[in-house]
Length: 265
Figure 1 (cartoon, one colour):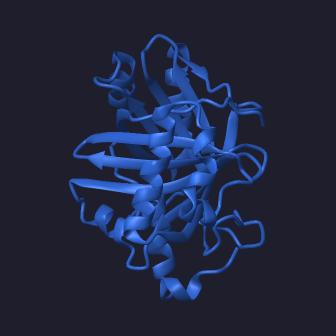
Figure 2 (figure 1 turned 180 degrees about the horizontal axis):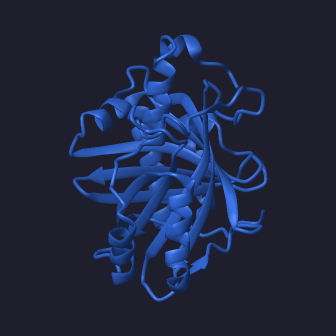
């Protein structure tokens, strides 16, 4: 898959997530169809792509704990690639949440450059960034990683079907399915030799769910367009917080100590 080499820097937005049956997610996509265009990065019918994310945290799981405690100002450190690992660049992201606002800084590096050495020796790539904003996003990621003593902990993988509002400044709707994870201690293994574990049935973190949930997500800048408000009301969508990283942590802890389950994949 060819993915456009564009970079989102310091993007402030609002997000709403809904864990729903696949059939309801399809109804949402049908409702949104007159107002949206498929994400051009996807392939097939429907247009979709695979996302693999390496989640960094420290050994105390501080970033996971901040999410569980609903800390007002918190962040995630994640490294993301698209499609088959190695076919696209790596995107280093700091996703910060301040109250209800999301601020994401993002920098792109070649796939073969990403690794632990890049965190400890960032100067090797400083001259390759095309803008100061992207360079600053990279340095922010490096600084936070060093400050908390970040290490690889979890890989999360899923298939995303995504659409962009064609008449809105920024409005997106996506459906994530086939949610999987695996513990890891590798900076660049990308799960090639590990065992992926399904988390569709636990992603809702509720025992009364009788279906394998998919994550329907709406993203906007400022107020939501009218068509999104109508969609939520007419389909009876109930907002539910969902963090794929924390879901993976809790699912793994349900078996035994997290460190005991980690691998080098």
